[in-house]
Image (tube, rainbow, N blue to C red; front, side, top):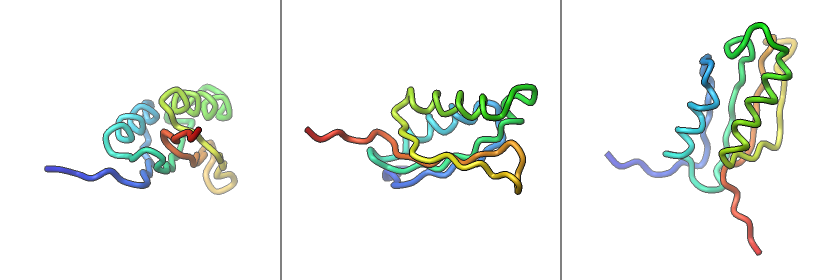
Amino acid sequence: MFLSMVDVIFSDVAQPDQARIVIINAQHFLRTGGYFIVTIKASCIDSTAEPNLIFAKEIQKLQKEFFRPFEQITLEPYERDHAIVLGRYRIQKFV
């Protein structure tokens, strides 16, 4: 089966390796310059650490793989220790 590249991926998984899951899916399916929306659930990654520290670490993992976040929104007071990160993937630089 052949799948075309997509313009946007949305990830809402409650797994400790959620950044890795997003990275693998983006490498296979997200076009260059495509957008991503990722929910980060801090307690699913490490329930003992400060949520803001976890958010920062997960964003760093994404940035190492050519993700360029442009907005982070916490979901307080609706969901505790949750954030949504929006951005673009493999942005082409024009010279």
